Image (cartoon, rainbow, N blue to C red; front, side, top):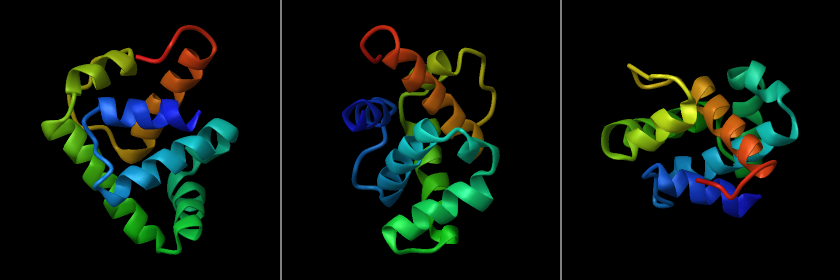
Length: 115
């Protein structure tokens, strides 16, 4: 599953040189295991990621905002639009970004190869 997650993140134009790459990958993994994380990103998901990487929730939030901005400004926005299954007119917030990626991986895992 981790390979599928990392392949999707890289396909969106987010490289492993960003700290947020690891946070996003781990966060998606957590959301796949327990969808409750999607209901409370700031209060449950960020602290869990921060605990795993020995950092602060604030740092996790900031670094995730950075990778989402990279995806939106310089990445594969077309792919993001496709997997969102609806038009995105503005850069999605972190919670929506996690929801889009988690739902896509979950759907692809039960059907065909990813992307």
